[in-house]
Image (cartoon, rainbow, N blue to C red; front, side):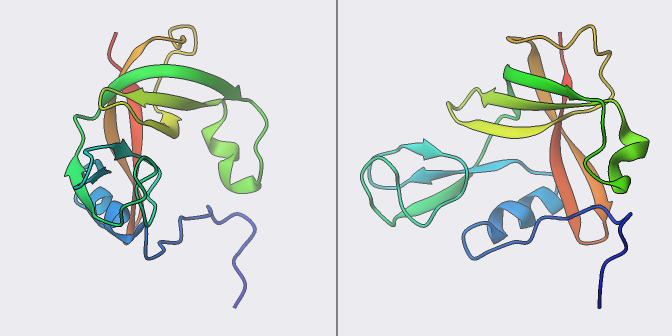
Length: 138
């Protein structure tokens, strides 16, 4: 069965990411922390990048951070995104020390800036998928 061209692509959870997406469905932002050395990491992996331990746990993140970099998308990559134009895609440095990629929703484009404070929000895109996104706080 093929997907219509206008359908928005959705994340496909893997064994490493399933817990992340399940938490997002509950409107919780989580990251991995090593039970051996305490290193926090994102994106989800099967082992700690610092000490190579497979002893990882999921911990709640504050949901606050700063814009590390961003771009304003003015051309849709597919018909599914045309109604969202223009939109902001940003690298966010969370207060816990990890970096994530997400959209900044409902932002005045003139206010988006490197270093701007952001907070997590959650966008339900289907019955089974909720995306962690961000909004400007400053």
